[in-house]
Length: 209
Ligand SMILES: C[S@@+](CC[C@H](N)C(=O)[O-])C[C@H]1O[C@@H](n2cnc3c(N)ncnc32)[C@H](O)[C@@H]1O
Image 1: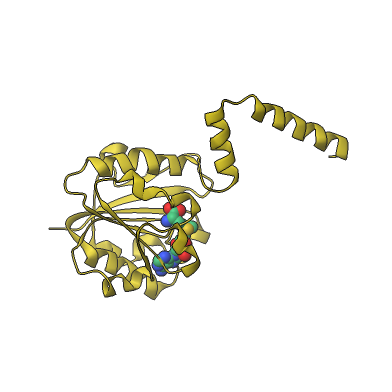
Image 2: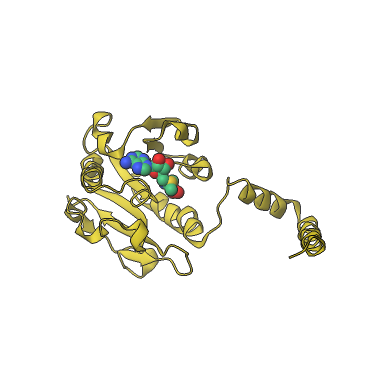
């Protein structure tokens, strides 16, 4: 593409942007700044899945693992709960909630007593840093430990070899949970979101009572 074609392309883009209503312009700008992500898996998480969690009884303590710029506002989805966040990268602490912990999930029980969480949400962490066998085994075991019996684990992961380094179905500490049929997905416990680049998949588990 030569310089003239490139200029024309940008002029078209600019015209399209100018023609948008203010609310849409804000969405586009936030997306470009990395503050807002509008992929199908993210929209599903922030819309349907969070709504379903809110609708469940006794959702007072939520643990959200791994934070980023675009998750900074997630506590606002749960105004009636305490929204705890954890990330082992200290530089990400600025994206955490008011109840943020700088630590690996494998060390979460050093800070929290057993059975204190009603929900644990781990999205885009397994295969995105939580990759080693020992740490993953321990990480899921600690999720189990902090969850109350009957509590919910929502696990978002990518079903491609590069992001499923251990073969998720062979992680033995994860097998201690019971698969939970989710009403959002016709009672299935596993749902692969269509049209996602990394085959984003949500799994739903509960801790047996
Ligand atoms: C791709 S981001 C995902 C952020 C967010 N959970 C989401 O929904 O997109 C992965 C994050 O997980 C964090 N992470 C990786 N391994 C971790 C571990 N063992 N314990 C806690 N956080 C971890 C990384 O530091 C990074 O901030």
